[in-house]
Length: 243
Image (cartoon, rainbow, N blue to C red; front, top):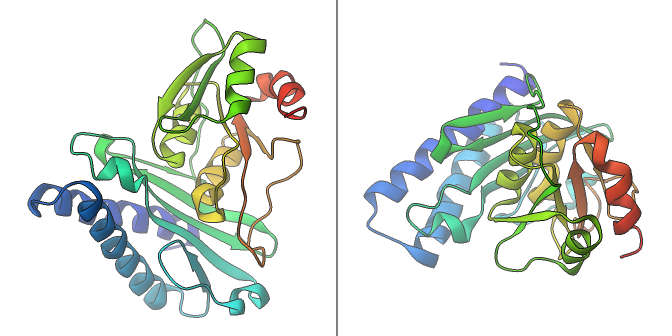
């Protein structure tokens, strides 16, 4: 498998393990979420060690290593994005993120949404059509940031609460929303795979101040982002730059 195929394969297979755990374990809530985090992380790390033994890995669920800073290839993974939503039986807005950072930029990335049986990859990402209506922005269901409220007020936007960062970004990719805006704190693994797929589909991706999103940094904190259809980037950034 090439890198893009591997990213998609790993995201899908990890998702299958998580769906089985969710269906058969009898667990729920935080206990289910944490067990899912560990199960998926163990699987992804084991497979990457087999398939790409010379590459470094940055994972939400494992200890970081400075070795990745001197590596030309780093897999940035979120084994279970939306741990809270995964723990609530029936919630579909969780995902598996697998991204490859290579020589300074994201290359092969995949986001799997197991509960809707979809995987989105840099190899075949396509931006879906938009329906008429007001600007639609997906945002955190539990803690919508102030910048999103400002966008609602200034641009007359409709806010759509949703869980996982990957689920939000892929909603924009499909055309179910026009933008995903976040300003409340994130880490590289939260956005690397969604941003890689979104860029491959032609979406705009940046920080709130329009600066680029940088990955494989010494401190992997990446607190804010804008992912949106390109035709809305200018008006959204005009508001977010002032945030």
